[in-house]
Image (cartoon, rainbow over the protein chains, first blue to last red):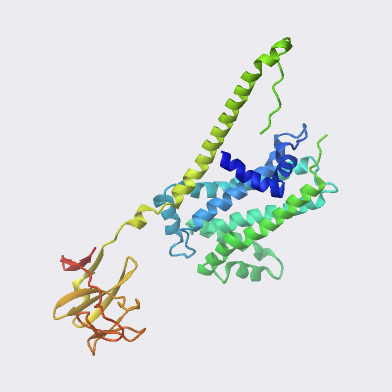
Length: 219
Length: 158
């Protein structure tokens, strides 16, 4: 314990950790009227972090190839110790994250928190919601099961309704006329790198804006 | 870590000083409870992660390679990947021999030359005969022989 104390003091004396901790964590006062419904945004962030860590673990075994994708997921579930748990947390966590984001949005809409000066909080939040669904949609294909294959097929069919560009968008999303290895590679890249990078950027914006304006004070 | 001091019992202000040491003990106990529960929580998160990182037992198992004798023909070499090694089965004078195909110089995979009846290394030109003995080039050690058994008309390398 004394060693930990010394390490902490080393950093504290140089970077003044304690005042920053007091202002932001230990001595920060939460408005008395802020209820449990104010937790949904933070919980959504927590589920996102859970997805990042469980996803990093699953990535150690996953192979983005139609011939081996399903086997690699089954290998994690049946042969890797605690793999079933990590895989379940990742799959269920995706649904939980969408649910929490929706609850967060419902609360913000109900209390009219999107009013000035917080309009852009709402706009960035809507972008975050779409990015969350995009992450869930691309991740759904990765185990290459019947459900995921047909789910991706129907999902990529939707943009066909766009006037003019529709068929082009469908082919772009499928990486060709039909779903195949290229689709899986594309979705894999989006799911593990592109979308997490974009969503992190929007989350950072969202949080910085909240810190600048402060949270909306309930009546 | 600093907690607000416990409000003293109403109606007994003169006993407040006397109960102070008890109060410190209680605070210490609560801190220990908090720390213990934090450790338990951290453990429940860390345990699945650490066990996930362990090598799955199925990956650590040694595998058995079975090659049917019918797949071999006289003076032909057959290459097989076995547990990260490249093995070559050479069938000469009606007897099979199994070598590690890695050249004993710097580990390139040697190629069988059926005409010259030699193994040739593509990297630095080492040449081995059909017994794996070095003939020329920058090598002094023969190709590594791999032990095998013949069972049910199959070569079994374990």
